[in-house]
Amino acid sequence: MTLVVRMHQQGGPDVLTLEDLTLPAPAAGEVKVRIEAIGLNRSEALFRSGRYPIKPPLPCFVGYEAAGVVEAVGPGVSGFAAGDRVCVLPNFRLGDYGVYGEQAIVPASSLIATPPGLSPEQAAAVWMQYFTAWAIVEAGKAGVGDAVLIPAASSSVGLAAIQIANWVGATPIALTRSSAKADALRAQGARHVIATTEVDLAAEVKRITGGRGAQVAFDPVGGPYVGTLADAMGDDGTIIIYGSLSGEATPYPHWPAAMKSLSLRGWVASYIWSHPQRFERVSRLIRQGLAEGHLNPVIAKTFPLREIAAAHAYLESNAQVGKVVVSV
Image 1 (spheres, rainbow, N blue to C red):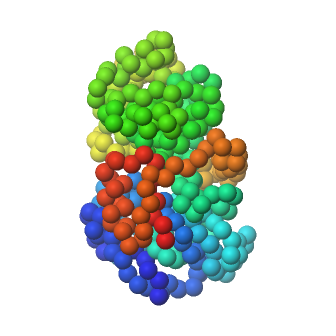
Image 2: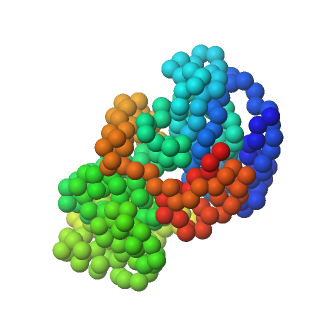
Image 3: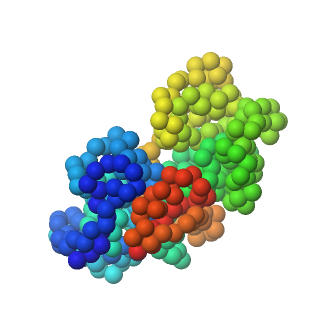
């Protein structure tokens, strides 16, 4: 028997149910992993609450990013063996598999070797955030001297974007609702911090950039505020929308986009991991960034597995600076 988390209905954090189950042997193309740490993601909270596009058959397992050790491999699996330290990439459909538990069955195609020198908690906080934040380079072409606006900057992906922007010589400008997290964001490398409920965003960005505006905006929120971001952009800038935390429709900001020749584009991390050559190149760069100290996963708080509901509540509180991790 092994302790796992399943969801029998959608709703608040309390629908995450701890159960003792016996997991089967891995089937063809699958691997059984002993889970050491789980990285929580906003998409899992949306999935749990019923606000995610995928509606799963219930009951189902939950979670898709973790670090651990291979215990057994199924028929046809090559490249991994019992005892290998691995990370589970979040590249399968939520609900089809799940890593919330002491053990998990996952596709072999979702495994990647753990980067050296990381704790299990850090290893569970690498791939989703850096593959997502790599958008500022891959899609936004951020480079030396470019101003990069980062809404929800205290999230794990926001901090990853700050680190990547600094690595490529850009200027990360962290956006946060109030000044409460300003010092923490500066300590994490933000060159400037703007409290969006306290100042006029466009005016403050123009002040910081000497009137040029931002070259890249990296937005997980969507909704009408994208128009405000467009007002803060400079000519030929790119607004990247990678989430919909607002829960509202995102109107196209026609006139700012037209007058400044702005580009608006969507982004999901699968843009990288679904393409082998792109995946090989960017994963190599992420490993390089970790080894050289440019990238450093930030853990906001760690919960034990039996407190998975509390971990989800904390994730949704917006109190964190960094990744929320569950230690198994």
